[in-house]
Figure 1: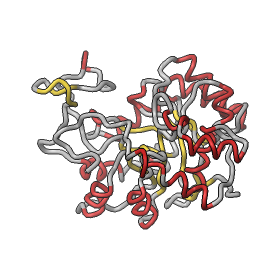
Figure 2 (figure 1 turned 120 degrees about the vertical axis):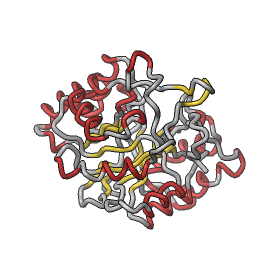
Figure 3 (figure 1 turned 30 degrees about the vertical axis):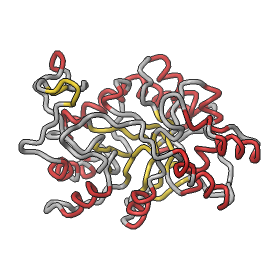
Length: 313
């Protein structure tokens, strides 16, 4: 069985199972989830983001976890740069650290590969989702004189500040990664690319590209996002019976066995604990899960409107 740690291109290691905190917006729930994950289930990796609106509560949970673990270096913390602040990632990271109550994070990601305008943020709140006044169903994208390669040029300055140990991206396609690598100011390769990945969206091409370029893929929504539709898949259920585990553990183990980081999200103590139970699967069984999309079709559950920017081309 693997050690459940992966080495980043920075030389540091990242725990292969992390607690996702997306949609954990209740402060008490978010705090309790982090504390339970570390104390009761042995998680050493917590993933949050500025736009989740829970950095304060998650940070309090991390502080309690640090007391339990005996040191800040015992836990891996990720947060993310929201689109309204892509022109000033250093300031955004400072604000995230203040909310988290930390001196540094282990990983800081560009949350989406497109900046957002700030002209229509409700009450001037940058931690919001501004919509285009001409097209209210679409996010107010900032494409006039900015793109993610400029954001990355500024992100590259952050590790030297000590505020983050590593930098990376999230929701980047192969084409967007190629554009990043070709940009004139590109110096530091992203340590990770965090994307939606599960048996209905296995991301074969993206996973291969990341491996070839020494980028660790991280999978969010490993059960298929809200409602966990994959838990009803017959192949998943049958393999759960074979390995004597729950369907959720089959999905998470599939990702771990494929060799990337998996970020299951829950606020329930028992589910948080069970999500960390990993089984070693045979190549034949991994292939069975690989093939689910061939009968059910590719399904992406997280696809916010960033038109005209091509997120998932």
